[in-house]
Amino acid sequence: MMALAGIPLGLNFRFLDPSAHACAGPLGKLHRAEFSDLLAVQAMASEIDVATFDFENVPADSARSLASARTFHPCVNALEDCQDRLLEKRLLRSLAIPVAEFQPVSSRTGLLDAVEKIGLPAVLKIRRLGYDGKGQVLLNQHEDLEPAWQALGQSDLILEAFVPFTAECSLIAVRNEPGEVRFWPLTKNAHGNGVLLLSRPGVLGADLQAQAEDTVGKLLAHWDYVGVLAVEFFILQGRLLVNEMAPRVHNSGHWTLDASVTSQFENHLRAICGIPLGDTTMTDHALMFNWISEMPEMRHLLLEQGLHWHDYGKNPRPGRKLGHATLVARNESDLMRGAARIAQGLGGRWPELLARLDGRS
Ligand code: AMP
Image 1 (cartoon, rainbow, N blue to C red):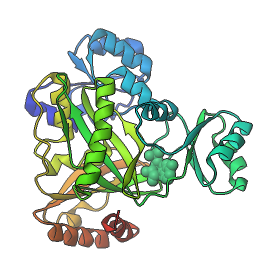
Image 2: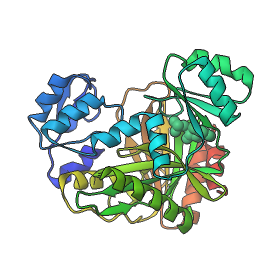
Image 3: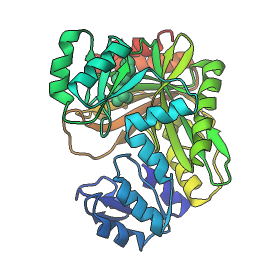
Image 4: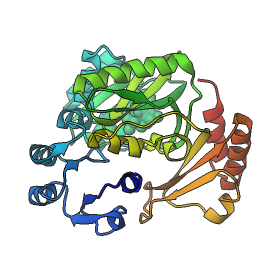
């Protein structure tokens, strides 16, 4: 999606990916190698002016190697801070940004101590490489501790207090080298089993938007950040707590392709290439559906006027995100009527998820 946004700007792309079927492959030269292959990283560096990444499990050594050879955005510090939930939470706390109570855990007795301090319910998570609810276990009672330790105890862990949130949301921002910052409207998100399924921007009001912008602005300034940054929040009694951060274009910002003057992908490229930033105003009411594990039947759904389809061309795998669709409409009632028709047509959990997204926050 980033390359698709950059080609009209006259940019050329090189991609590093271990898979011969990398979905960006047709859009530029594919360097097929492991992300940790420093020789491949340097070979690619010799062919480019600017490097970036679109998922945060890039090994820090590869990032440093690229950054030593070429302009590299966002900075390696931001990448490393966001790769480790403990570093992430400590940074947030040091900037006086509200987060759930947390404790590092590296042993069975450490887990008991952490539960003693934080109480139950709590969420035990692996510190690194976890995403979409993977590598985490909800602890409701003391009997849950041993199975959770058995499941996750080989990794470094963090215990977080369970947040009884009313809703989840995310803010996407972009900052360029001179320090100009733009925000998209806060996006309300509904997850199923920890995986983002529905997103609706622009419905959370000015107060939450201001809180989120204040928080994200502090992080951007801290890292002297260049590019797109996404921050996910819990909403609890009208206040925001940060759940996690992603130093990259983000799942919950894909709607910007179809309902914003400038998409997150285009603005990320503009920021890292020194091109003036584009307008982040929403152009329509929008609601995004994520397609996980399998793509639904497209022809029937596209009878819905205003639905934009994005098939990533990925091989289906249980739990894998394969695409998304964004419904846009001129007004809220048309949007929600169309969304209800789509959710009914999809069946399963979709009507309930839509009702949850539409509920109070
Ligand atoms: P994560 O991978 O940390 O973003 O977690 C995935 C999802 O699990 C979140 O979007 C929440 O729905 C839920 N979750 C994670 N941590 C907590 C927490 N401390 N309290 C309540 N729910 C959580």
